[in-house]
Length: 118
Image (cartoon, rainbow, N blue to C red; front, side, top):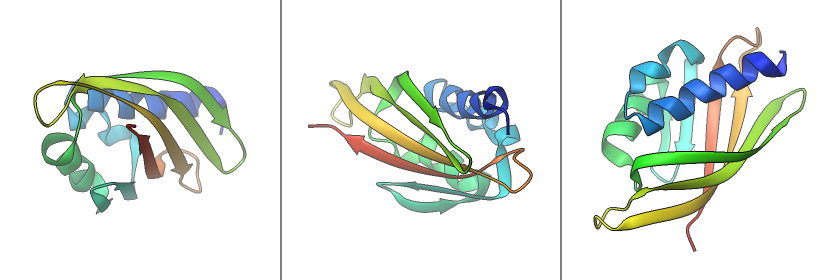
């Protein structure tokens, strides 16, 4: 998959998070999509939508993607997310997201999220 295509799919995911609109990510996800985060594994578009609307620890977020790495099998992004924490105070955390794509390289099949908020 060309990196431009991967970047478009990845950008749809981050737009969905930052705009709190899961529908922005729907076209980027495969039918067998799995989202793995601190909330545990969530399946399908409905799983991601539930994460975005119900399970996030940082809301009103802005993801500053500072690095993208692409290889044959996965793409990785790293950066800083800022927003509002569960207590209503400003929050900031470093993140690393690993993206896996379907066999046809047309959609995201899995996202694994790693957060460092210390």
